[in-house]
Length: 74
Image (cartoon, rainbow, N blue to C red):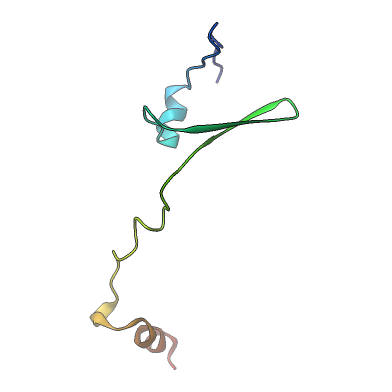
């Protein structure tokens, strides 16, 4: 996909890429240059693991060690 650089140095990121990366207005992007190649990365402020912490539960309300023992056959 191509984009055109404006007189102000602005580029519109193609919609398909914005959608795939979940880029929304206000998203922070990091720009780096490496031997003539522009590298752009989306900055994610939150830890993606923290969003899932505490959402799971073990069968039968077992503790972690009891569950591991039961599943490993120890």
